[in-house]
Image (cartoon, rainbow, N blue to C red; front, side, top):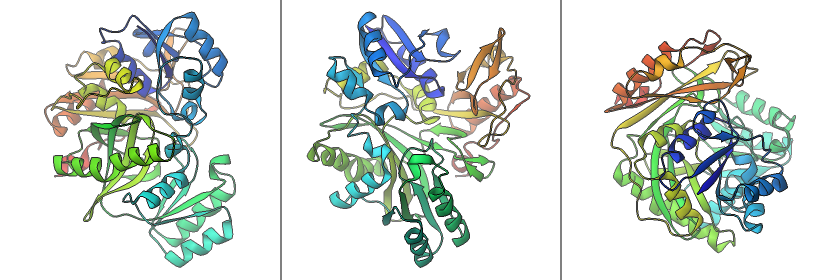
Length: 421
């Protein structure tokens, strides 16, 4: 079978590595891909926003399955266009992708179907939003309703921070994504990510992970797209995972079917595990980045077989994962999450990959004049698979330290919370 994978980041390199192992695979194409995907697939210069161009390529190359990596094409309806053209795709429809594309839609769905989440209100007016945060006080969470590349959320610990967040949102800091604000109750506890595969009718648990959103050690500084992650998340015990499936994921799948927009693809639940049990923070409708990198390192099933099963409405009862821990450290370009410094030379990736258990994933890289250079904010992911979080952490940082990237930086404490247990 020929497969087309849409995307260019670390998530897509990790997916490409997993797909390339499948006995079902004949040829793998990645659009547009990166220097890492080029090592295991054919990179093609396709624009995911050009639906007609994607469809024409799929027909020309006899593509049997399209796997959509990033959220933007999902929210804009790429899967609908592919299926209307008679092509199979892994990912939700435009209507179902609203679970990620509109935080307000998701909160309203939770309220209607009694899915546990924090209290909230929606606002299109700055003054009303400011009045609400002043009434509720801090801590409080201010979110842009739409897609904001993982940066449209402010956890305001003071009233001043909340007011600044509202002002920034309604001043256009997030463009169209900030046309509406969703202001939520601050939830106390420990965050975790939980992933389930869905085929429109049923859901099966995939894996858990914990991300590190803040740019600095000790969870300091502004939010990013993610500076590192590990899987599984120790807080996601079998009991908690079962509750998440029973109280959050399965009711959501049933609700989406009842609303006329059945969800097929991967459902990524951002959770807060507090004294009252798990509550939903928000949904994403694709594999997380960098969570995907650590989950793929643990996957023992055939990824292509699983994704086909989702697209064909025939999910298995369970997914096989290694009992080991995978941990990834993100190497970012100096200046991230602001304006990253591009063009920095990267060398000695091969030295890192000589370390048993270490894999280097390309995220924001390109070849320029025969040299690998930085071409984004998050540049590389160093992934390690080992027997414990502490062992995986030590291995990943050995890999990081083997790479020469003078213009890069990373957090030095990925996995700290789990190790502290």
